[in-house]
Image (cartoon, rainbow, N blue to C red; front, top):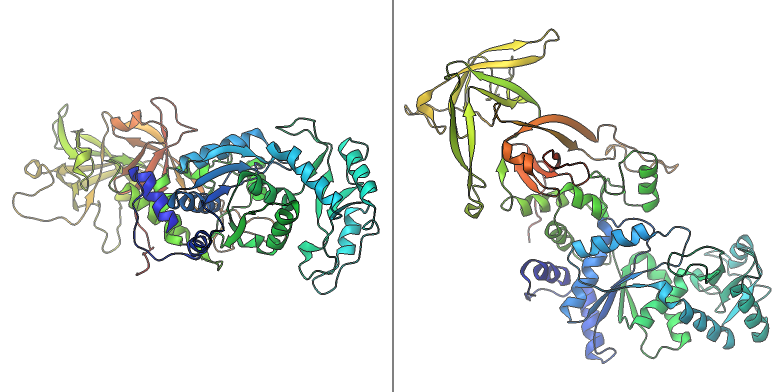
Length: 567
């Protein structure tokens, strides 16, 4: 598949072809090339810069880039900036960052506003050809005249204006003589068409707004359904790959490029969107979460924007694999979030060091260990990847262990630390719990144990076995750090949205802990990832971390119920 090849190209620097079944898009492109409809392949990703990209956009980016790469063609990044009310330079820069980070090498970026003069000329051509007219109807009246799915529309009273009158009115619209909403330019197609999109759609509107690229040059702006096919045609795009909601717009797309007069118009092909269970992807909803302070920005790690996934610690390779596993189809379906988590686990398990970190520490004191003594243990950085080497950790009389690795009154089959039980301190010694202390509130403050000096390295000389192994950090050189544990932002039992449009937010989606880590982790750089032994994969938060004081957010836990489907 094209996405798989994009992933291979990103990882190895070369495109490695596999003999795989061709998806329906590839089959159509193969046919177009064979029949001579096009002699090259050009694709594009055309986002509106009105928010940050999310995981769904990654599918379109990687598909369009992968197709272009597969056919040795060209991939363009183009911003569809035809609506100045919502668009910002901040979003332009964020989108460029995201596309580059995903590994899609693009030409551009280009902007719809680059073509405003050409679009205006295209509109004049339609007017001169009797295929566009200026209407005085209000938005409500246009909606009323349009009809319904079961009733045909009625002709606009201005539909038969002369070419000369339409040219004059459109020129005056451009010159700013009319108020917003007082006039529009409509395509003259068929008010009785079965497809409502073909019932004389609006192609230009009046909007006295400052544009981020063109300033105050224009007070009329093209509508998306008119601008988008023209942008594709101006750039020489051969295949406009878009999601299924644009299928009903395809006849209008074709009408625009054909009637403006392009000899080799681009071809629109639709594919199913990527839907992820129990996540927020709608830009207006994410914007609301940002503005009301539910999240700390468009890159909050609980979101699934590309920026949020990057900040959380996801890698381009993990997202490429996720998109590849989902495949390309014409049928909408939802993908379990667990598949995305599987992909990052699989990507990181051999790539990152496995380090000792305690999320919720309680002190462990080894009563019979010599006071003032410190020893060192050499531990592998990743047992599954010898290339990552090893490091030295220190050990002394006082350590920190996880609070949940001790229970005063354990249930059956609890093999960690409790009074009288012996466990293995990972890579170090066997220890037996002999006592513990509580504060006035009943909280465990310290645990006491004894150790077997003959069990160094975690092995018993007399062959006795222990069932529990726990990790630890030496209290003498432990570094305090903030840990942030994420759960789904949405209450999964209730679903994402209510009927009134509100969201079911999980109040426990973020837990902040004060943990301790081995000294090397205190020097972690932003976006640097690790496996914290027994606790999951963590990443140094790029927004919250400071030099020498990283804040670690959990990317994903170690356990997963997700299984790859059988081939």
